Length: 332
Image (cartoon, one colour):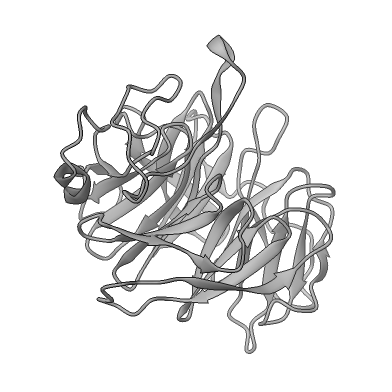
């Protein structure tokens, strides 16, 4: 199956839809309401992660910023707990999360423009804020970082966020763009997706047009992506030994750096281009060979299907009720 989150909000769809995957499968949704949250409001759902019977979802609206834990199977998941809420100052408008077997979870947050680190409990249902990265603390900058900051904003003065230290070039700070002015000033573009692999944390800096690399344990900044020019990158996918990133109408791929590499590098090469609109999430199913799925969030919201190499992309689901954000393959 393919799970889909949508732009959501007041006029959008604020739940996960499930579709049968594979060639020849019906494009009628298996479920339009995968999540059952009771009275807990869902809005502007973004990143998803599945660990056994637990499904984690970034609930990213302005009114309810949290990451929720659901338990279930198939196309039905019931709310179990709040993994983390915006009572932790670094959590605000979460976009995506990445889990590691060490028990840590990394959450990117659009309005604070930081990646927070969480210590997940043994049951996996809840978490608490982890320690600020030793790398950031070692910089000995004037001021205080938001609790549990693992990757910080380069600009420490953001609207409606406590002031934090400014980072210099080369210190790994995330870029932010703004819109409006005065009381209407807001963060327009900032951190997006995150992924963990081979001992490193990969973070999409959308306004910086790059993917930044950090040591998973210390948070040490290891540099940014090279290769082809990324323009407004947003979503990541780790597949086999590669890292894929969506940027506008393009999908780029780079070999993952080797574990314990002292100078990790990402060198992206263009692997696919679409004409339908701007790409958001991507996914692959488990068929042999696998099919690829590409979400188009602008123009006519739709999902394309292609081959294992992201070629021969053609419309798959064209009658979507809202702009798709993240895609995730879930075994039946």
